[in-house]
Length: 180
Image (cartoon, rainbow, N blue to C red; front, side, top):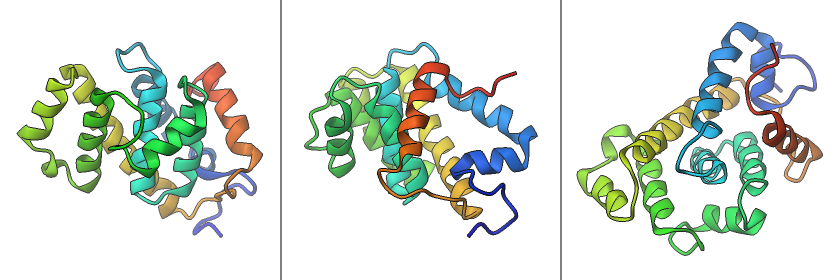
């Protein structure tokens, strides 16, 4: 049960956005830029980072949502995303994504946990400064988004609920920004 009077039946972060719509636009704009705008990291890779950070933060709604979003935007679908969430060190992903996930994990712990060695490893694996920047910002933003959802005790549908699949279809087709 949510801690405040969020709209009934509206799951996850969308309930917070519905409760206070003026905060939704900048938060959704940030997600759109980070996860969907042109980038050398694929949309699927960026969604994997979001899902991975959400898993580490134990935010079930965001993990389930972004796992579905990533699965729709990666060549390997759900098995690749689940392999990353289980253990990025053994998942069939690029060395670059593996190094970026290492940075994301450090940011999730504390921004100060990221070391020069982490950055060097990402660069050695082919990551650009933009990719490193965006990974750090995705991880930091998802720490905020995860805490927003869980701090309000927003409705979290169970694993496999159709809302995650429907949300993935909507995000892939239309993006994060609210219709104007």
